[in-house]
Amino acid sequence: MVPLALPTIAALTPDHYRIAIYDEEIEDIPQKVRPDIVGITTLAATARRAFELGDHYRALGAKVVFGGPYVSFMADEALKHGDSVVVGEAEGLWEQCLADFEKGRMKQVYKSAEFTEYNSQKPPRWDLVNMKRIFQVAIQVSRGCPFNCDFCLVSRIFGRKMRYREIANVVEEIKAAPSKYFFFVDDNLTINKRYAKELMKAIKPLGISWSCMCSLDVATDEELLHQMAEAGCFNILVGFESLNPDSLGETQKHHNRGGSIYTEAIGKIHAAGIHINASFVIGFDHDTEDEFERIFKFTLEHHLPNVNLHLLHAPPGTETHKKLLEEGRLSNYDPEMGVGHFPTIDYMHMTRTGIFDKYMETISRLYSFPVIREKAEALFSNGAFTRPGGEIPAWLKARLSWITFKEYVLTSDKDRRALFAFIFNLIRRKQIAIDRGMGFLLSMLGYNRHIREHQRHMAEYRSMVMARDTGKWKDKSKVT
Image (cartoon, rainbow, N blue to C red):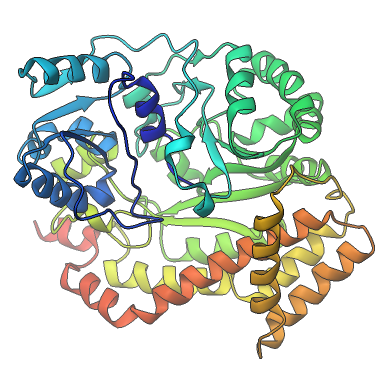
């Protein structure tokens, strides 16, 4: 999935510009391209590559403008490699930047004193993206987050007051999109229950399939949960973050309460025919290596095959970054390692090498095919996942079918074949929709491939981690 930023920026660009979008996740950037002006969006983990590109294009004579979460808090660093930085939301600022570019007097920093109204927007320019490499497209209907989690940037970038687009404007964008599969990138799609219900009514006739992020309290409103399923929702990303109550309190994640509430809510979501992408973070000051086993058992008990497990990172702009910087716990800090797989801070009760080894051990277990099959048997046997998804183009359906057959049937891995046989039998007995079953197999394959690739570089990665490992912070703090 191509991030939403560049197609959105392209839609804001005046018609007299000739625009090209390149995303290195899916394609190489042509070396012979010599643009007049370049916009580069970056996170902390991709900043080094973004700055390399900035230097490259400036050497060619182009003006370079940076945007995105990282440079919004590290503008001085970005300006060493570019001409301008757009801080925060781009609407209004990008247009001003281009107008100044045409006059030959670009400012170094473009920053608005207020947030954009965000009640409508032009459809993103998906026509500029290579859709043959894309399965779903991103969409956003709101900005802001009322919560104030210390390790998160959302409320710092978009504010704590929620802003919503007009639903008719959202429907227009969906109808214009080149895919029937969407991911709502809103950080909590259902926090305003009234808006969410109106949205569900409006998109139900469109025949789309989609996933989103929201808090677990969506399960307290069974009417809304039913409407989401009927409108095409097949997956919800839920930020459990931690199963340690002390760690939740430490990070201001007070709305997660755990216990039987989790069990009841997960059960209701699964019963609606929606599966959960469970997100966890390990590395808070109250965490030990025992958290890995606690999370593994929790996902097994609650039949959660899709697990996003991250090591705590402290990107600039967060309260966590500010706190750890003041405490001197960002020694050897490398933002490029801040992708969730690598330790980047000094942890209170764990060494960097210890937490990295435990992380790799745990995700390897989570995405081993015997464990995936055990969870799948419990998850899909309830018969709730029979609702078909959105239409898939014939060429893409053929391609995905071939990948599934090749990876699950033409293999000597008996565990992989056993998982395929189980899902195939569910499809044959109509206990699961074919696209749900195939989608599950492909997503599990993607996770597993990613981990196997990680494992191939383990010697190099572990050496990088060990070189930055100075021990447990609790031991160092006693010495100092």
